[in-house]
Length: 186
Image (cartoon, rainbow, N blue to C red; front, top):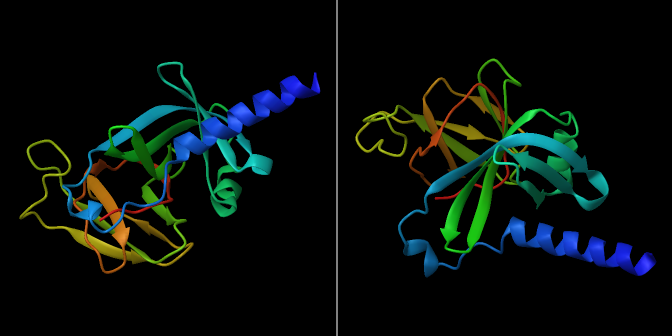
């Protein structure tokens, strides 16, 4: 019985590690065009403080898991199993996804972004152009610097976040609720 439990625990640990991703790409890789934004919609299944893990059941019925830093997990403990949840990520290579934010629709009356990245970031927001986010070239883009642990709100339709001093193209659609920024991209 103990060996089976250890094998299952090791399998979960490996799965969680694979879903989190690998370190940021080197400078030579950063000259590539920006990766597309993606989102997984579902419901929170559980938050495991001892493993720094979060489990979601996607709208398609998949059980997905991620690991995050303890401060992020501490914030997620406020939510209950069954709460709607969105995991927003970037596809950085064909077999690698990097989480940008965890959002909880309906948990706030405006789009609220909480900086959990560990560094000062800028939230850039702007309108949809041609009915889509990520087309803001030439459009008015607003910037809000967010200190570590701070938050910002926006009334714009699209958003992105980058390290302070960097820029990004608002390619994510905003929504009413709270989003926890865990990694920002150029």
